[in-house]
Image 1: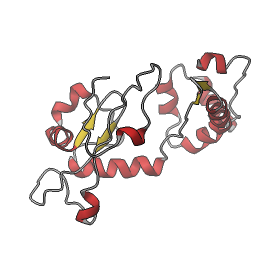
Image 2: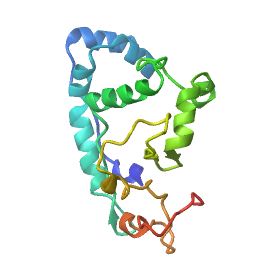
Image 3: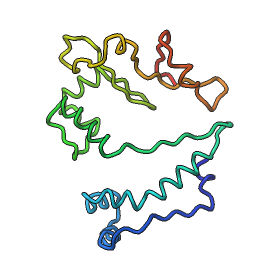
Length: 184
């Protein structure tokens, strides 16, 4: 469907300063571009911003089964840094500059214990919810008022609507009496 939405659409990023254009011209992979342009992320972002806005505009006008496609912008650098600060507070041996794969996480048992204790992962989502126990040595104490914290729950997994092709609205699935399992 996205291919149809992009028919007859030409995309070109804005030009970066000449020294960066020369560096990019020598690159053959995304990893190579990342390593050569480290520290120049804002210039690259500026170069791509018009393309990102155009793609967002095109995709949000597309429909599937009479429902508009939703598009979201990526996390900001500040949001990612905040996330890493929280992760590093669990295991100080982690580094924001490193790449981690599930296979190598055995080297970080504190993170694995935290994920097993406080996280719910599925094909469509990953969320974190502290247990709320004051004696817990895995997750930090809650900072919300207890009555507010007790209303929090893990995000439910998507549930097909029965008609095929769509899922039930979030509000219909996110109810306190229902615990959905990831069977879809």
